[in-house]
Length: 405
Image 1 (cartoon, helix red, strand yellow):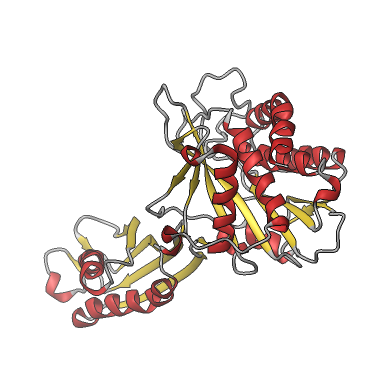
Image 2: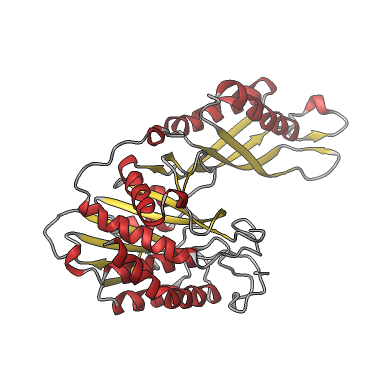
């Protein structure tokens, strides 16, 4: 079956590159992927899938019916949105939308998802169960997965797989990570409320700016002495606003920031910990405070069994040299984690880096991909889907499979 899947993918390669370049030329921002969704729906329908549009606001769901009676349903999720970045690649198929660019590879993700649907739709009776393809809107603003789930995209799903491009991994190589792949990402707003006064008489006022500076410093220092160093936390204050004049002591300061963590228990404890620190700084100086902590997306925690499935599929397809075991998680966020609250799943990194040139990072105006990686992604996902139903024995747990952070 692997040979057949590789042959099908190779034959589709010119069409897949055509699809990817069309998507790259016509990027759409989060929640606005109407043309992309219509294009995706058309391709899926041409493959004989049952297609539903408008799922998760702008998302598309395509369902491939298997020929057997296995009740398990495997979902394959890809995302479709672009970023508000002016493309500077100079490619002949560069973005035609000013200020919008597929700088995170979601055009490749969508193409890999479509290619996987094309391949699996030709396997017919070889699939005893159903495959549901989720083409999601608004990943970049961490909203689309919640929208999809709310509209029933995960109903009946027993396992889910996904892919994300990675320019630091060479094309032709699949990155496998056991345990935590990405971080939980939350937002917070801290308001410090003091008392205004004349800059010449600070003792008659409560200086919100000075106290806010102490809050920032104390939070950063407390991480290193109160948080488990083996369970990292990154706290960033990215915006500060307060004060009205250089000689007037400010009575209010607003701090906006983000908090990243990998371990679920750590993530749950962070709001109380932050408020405790803020209170400890403010109260001795007579300041009041408010902490508004907003949960974002949780950490992507790759399921061991499904990660083994991806690893074994990639190894059979590309050999051991085609696999890179990722040793460290990313502190970036991914709303694929939302789906993992409803079914076990795993995301792999698809190497898209050129071997003979510099590879700009994700979210860079010069970001480019080696398009030969598309077939690598399609074969890996399609073969993993096939093996999902045809694995006769549970995969053995490799020694590196036990790492979780």
